[in-house]
Amino acid sequence: MTTSYTLRSASPAKSRADVVVVGVLSTPKGPKIATGGEDVAKAYGRKFAPLLATLGVKGKAGELVKVPTGGTIGAPVLVLAGLGDSITPDAVRRAAGGAARTVTNAASVAVALPADSPELVRAVTEGYELGGYAFTTYKKATADDAPGDVVVLSPGARRKESVLAFDEAQIVSRAVAKTRDWVNTPPGDLTPPAFADAAVASAKEWSKGRGGPKVTVKVLDEERLAELGCGGILGVGQGSAAPPRLVEITYSPKDARCHLALVGKGITFDSGGLTIKPAASMHEMKSDMGGAAAVIQATYAIAALGLPIRVSTFAAMAENMVSGSSVRPGDVLTQYGGTTVEVLNTDAEGRLVLADALGRAVETEPDVLLDVATLTGHMVLALGDRVAGVMGTDEIVQGVLAASEVAGEDHWAMPIPDGMVDRIKGSKVADLAQHDWVRWGGGLFAGAFLREFTGGLPWAHLDIAGTAFNSGGPRGHLTSGGTGWAVATLVDYARALSKDD
View 1 (cartoon, rainbow, N blue to C red):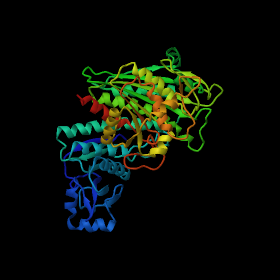
View 2: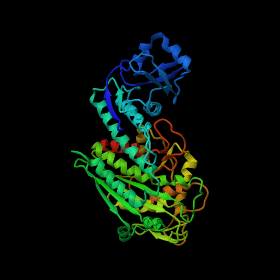
View 3: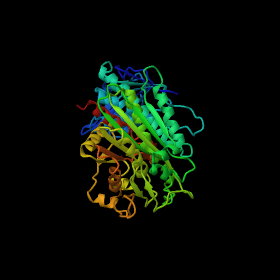
View 4: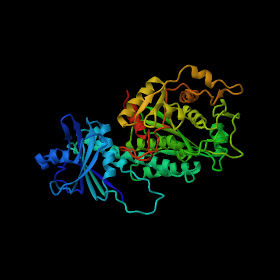
């Protein structure tokens, strides 16, 4: 079932939807119905506070309680979604996401979470759409219990800025959901050639309809990569029966105010190569293409939003496998542009494919260069699995952090210490060492390595190794499996960049 979303200004208490969702704040004096749900509290009157107490409702973040209404309001079921102690876009987005999974077997839902500003309208819409995401492609046919109609209730529903926020939120949600689909797809079905084909097919889907966004997609196969001298992508992919690809996407509106280049790591499966990974978590290495998926879908969303910004996107796709033709530790690869690199750890393959893609991106002469990759386990050790690392040019890093705050994706600035330059130039036989065996600072080493291929342009690297895949249970709007991390941040960065004088 395809869910239809509508923005309206109406009373939640009088709604005839099957379910009404309202927010609850945690206050020193006890739980309090948040903005948007006042009509519901009024309908219950004095008996509402005792009801909340009886049910044990606290209003804490993540709390979700279903209440049969017995005709007190128009809807037969009321869902109380905890917001914590304040109304913020993050709190609302997470509450909406949790509510979406709580509501089952309902034909219609009215969401009356706080939505009295464009920012909150966006948060409710994105949260509910993404919280209700499910990847069911490989499951037997089951009853679809997604609601047919979801109404986002907002007092500003007729305001142009609220309508715009609502429409744009659906575009971003669509891009995040598609990114999740790709990350969740089994690696045997999303090989580099299949991934490239999916990128082309997705572009056509986004461009359907009159006035659809126009992008140009070019796929470079292994023969073309060899002609160009993309030794990193070819070297990583040479151990696989599925040959590598480089997908290049261009969005060039006539009124473009600036030029953004995006680069993504697309390792469709990472066995670690001859430096093989432990078996326990290898099944999750289908997510090693999360960076490429994110930059591709972010590009399509930017185009669909009609942002006045030129975007050049480069998604390097390869499968890192073990075979008699696999790249060996000690081999020397020649990257696009001629820099030679000594391979010392075949499980540090992402930087090799990114180096070629960054070289291609630099030639387009962008104003800003961003790369996104599930790059290093070191970053996960440093920041955990809920925060991504960002490093690069100070001004660009700060811009990414600001965009990520708006997008509701946590990032943290990481340094590239001067000493890393000596480490990456430590090879005795090549221009650069791809890896070293110093135990600390591996994520920073990787950033320093990538910087060598940015041509001195304003640049930031987003290491999403811990955040692209959620191994645990769902939380807020983030479901289990692929999260679609970085799509919203990239779109918000592009928004800000297109407005920058």
